[in-house]
Structure formats: structure tokens, C-alpha cells
Figure 1 (cartoon, rainbow, N blue to C red):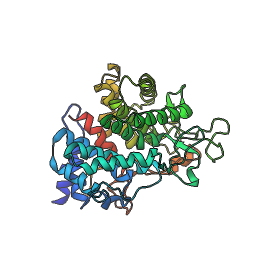
Figure 2 (tube, helix red, strand yellow):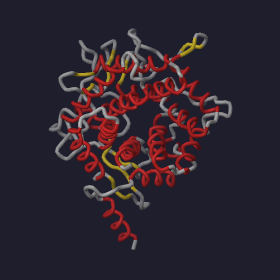
Figure 3 (spheres, helix red, strand yellow):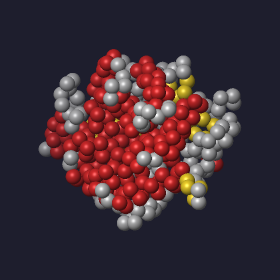
Figure 4 (cartoon, rainbow, N blue to C red):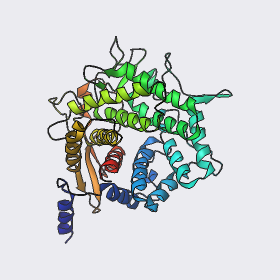
Length: 389
């Protein structure tokens, strides 16, 4: 009987062109059922992007559905780290630890509770600093935040980091009239783009080393060697989420929009016939390369959001529709009868070359392994939030 039930569920999981889907709801419900009392049960990462990228996706499903269980689940995580006075525990000296700030902004909007505003302000001040409390975050000589304050990331910026901090800063600045936050976010984004964006491919390299001494950095440019699908996904989501709140009167608004539209050219040009994007986007024939679902979902979110916002021409429709159909083909049914997402790259940093990237093999979530990776959940929720409603 159990085998027949799973078979029926699997049949339902096969996408049909044009058929309405509710993967955003199905995955949100599954996450809540699987991980109690909150998402940290899955990751064990505490106040970190590993948790907040999933909940940020669930936030977007909540906005579309109004399902209070999603709001309560997000709040249950945040309240473990934000006190009634708005103090935030577990802060990390890395950009990945800034991302949960977006949840504080969301909860303040939804509940009006002052502690969430205070917590968001503390996150902002922790990163940017105050006159009597300077930022603990190291910067390159030209002013770019290191991705993490450790030897491994010494003088290193990544395009991933743009997503972890800058949309939060722009939204905070727009909500509370803080032009400094907006200016910092825009400066950091344009700075990493200036170092990593390849105008010939319209795509950014994964990272940049000011010293040009890291094993992966080019001795002249300092860039890493590869264009990695998920880093492009992070960067594309960062741009559309910043543009959503960036005033069109900002002096760098046009540059930000141009950067996004240039990036879209590179994304569209590297889509495969299957509708997905490869792990190594520029090397489809590389031995061991594979179609990767997290970068695909993130880029799909950025394309569709740009289309809905009127920032893209209609000739992106075919790219978007193919990507959504293809991504659904990577959804399966787990042993608990609920959906899982397959074929995404686990968490990792910059590698020396393409061969080292593809040595890290794709994973599923959930998985029978002890270690669970958040990126697949994040991508499918973000994509579903713009494709299903």
C-alpha cells in the first residue's frame, strides 16, 4: 500500500505545461512539519543565512497566501535570538550573519512590535558602525567588506556577500529614512561588480582578492577563475531585491538597473536547452558538470521579478517558462510523502578551478545524510513565490 501511495505522489510531482502548481505552499508546509520547533532544528546554524534564506522564501509565500502558520514559524525562529528589548544574540563577524536582518524587517512590518525594529537597527549598526561603536567588519583598502573576518577570506569580497547584506540595508534605509544604509549597500554592490563582472560574458566571477595572493585569484585581476551558478543566483536576487526599494531618484539607480539588465543578458545566453543552468555556467562540456537547481531557482526568481516590475523585455518569457518547467522536474517525493528538491550544490566557498567545483557533488534536501543544506529549499521557495501567484 505504501509503495502505491508514493507512486501516486510521484505522478503528481511531474510538471505539466501550464498546469497550476502550489510548490511554494507544499514546501512551506513540509518544512514546518519536518523541523520543529523551528528551522534551526534542520541546520543548527543559529543566527545565520542558512536559516534565514529558507524563512525569507517562506515569508514571500506568506505574503501571497496570508497563512498565519508561516508567520508564526518565522517568528518562532527570530524570537530565539531577539530579546523583548530588541537585543540580538549570536551575531557573527561575517556577511552571512547579516542576512537574518531581513526577517526582523518583515516581522516589524507584520506585527508592529518595536523589538523587531530595534533588532534591525542593531543589525544595521553592527555592520555599518556608529561614531562611538565602529564596525567590527574588516574592509579592503578600497572599502569593500570582507566576506568573513578570518584568514581564509582575508581581503576577499564575494558576489554572494552582496545578497547577504545589501538588500537588507536598502530595505532598512527605505523603511526608516536612512540614506546612509542605502548608500553603503549600493557602493558595496557596484564595487564587487567592478571587480568581478566580465563584460564579454555579462556574468560575474565568484569572488575577488585585493591582495591577489589566494590560490584561486588571478595574479593581475585578483578575480577567481570561475562563474558559479549559485553565486550568479545570489547576485541576481540581490539586484532585484535592492531595485525594489531603491529610490529611482538615487544617483546610482541607473547604474544599478544597467548592471541588472547586463547580468540578465549573461543569464539568458547560458541557459541550456533543458531550461536549467549548469553548475559551471560557461563550461557545459566539462566532465562532471551538472544541471544545478539552486542557481536555476534563484536566477528564475530574479528574471520573473524583473519582468513583473517592468524592467525586462517580453523576450525573456521563453527563458522564464522553460526554467520553471525544468526546475519542477527536480522535485521528488521523500520517504515522508512530502516534497524534496534535488541536484543542488551544497554550501561551499571559492575553489581554485572548475574541476574543484564539480568535485563537490550535488545533494538533495531533505536527505538521509546527517548534514542538511538549505540552498535547495531557498531556491524553490523564491522561484515559486513569483511563478505561482
